[in-house]
Length: 168
Image (cartoon, rainbow, N blue to C red; front, side):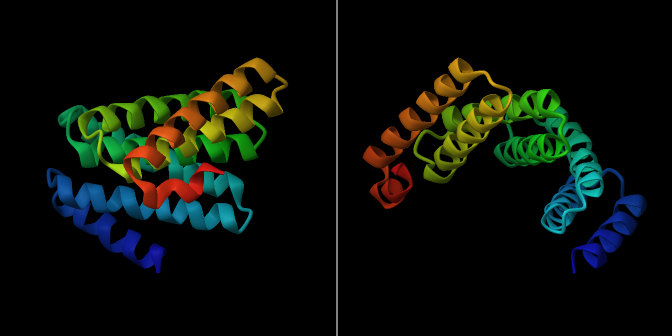
């Protein structure tokens, strides 16, 4: 399904390269396909799809740096790219990508402090960073990242009790 959608969006993007909406759709297709490849254990292909999505989404973010959708898409691509790199054993690169994702999610949270979903994803990104730091043997960095995740989850539990189940 994602491959068919990707083929259509690539063709549309080739015909209308200035259409940001088509390019956004193409980035989404690339990202979803990357997730699919990762689930299948095809990590090099997953990384390639996430990298392509990141490049595309970052180019859209340059055009509209304060656009929430562009920012969220770029953050998602960085997070997924970081996860893929880590699974390939390239943890330092993965950590760098996840750190960029965290910066993007922080900015989103500043743009809309009441958005519980962005807060939840930010906490999850901090948890991912903590796991990667732990794998590298950097316990202090892992502990600091977990502290950040917990702080976000606590704020989230106060602001949006429906997300409180994620606090555990």
